[in-house]
Image (cartoon, rainbow, N blue to C red; front, top):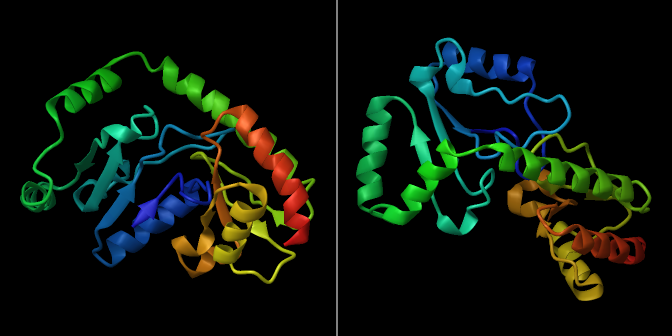
Length: 221
């Protein structure tokens, strides 16, 4: 399974990394599930490569995507799956025995989003980009926080370097002492230990408050 742009790290796979995935999948006759929900939320000069568009990959790639991120339709719970016909048929059988279908007005809204003007998406990404830069710049000034570059999606995933607390304990401490809510990195697997994920899909003034509070509390963790 591949997720690029990635949640929680914000990484976007490079051309070389995509080529490596294609090589491994073809050499070992593997299917690839490609989560591309953040495909339109990319910064700087980074490029999203859809695995299904690579030579020889359409028949072995299952794309999952949706409207929650690019079109800010999180509460509408609408998405899609695209892939080889035999796989899609099996998925349809499972779907009809679990959730039936999305509401008709929700599907109509999805069609309108796809067929309508896309400038709103670009404008939203530009705002995310401003917030991303603001948060990353502020993190550089806070002792005890290291954060990798964010290339896509709308999260930051800093590591807390001057504490022995677990990511869950850090998250709880930030709630108790700073009134700042994040997601413990351990929720994303062992490699996330020591990290906390924060969303930048918030109002700029709220992010500014978060940064002020983190600057006071993080050095004391």
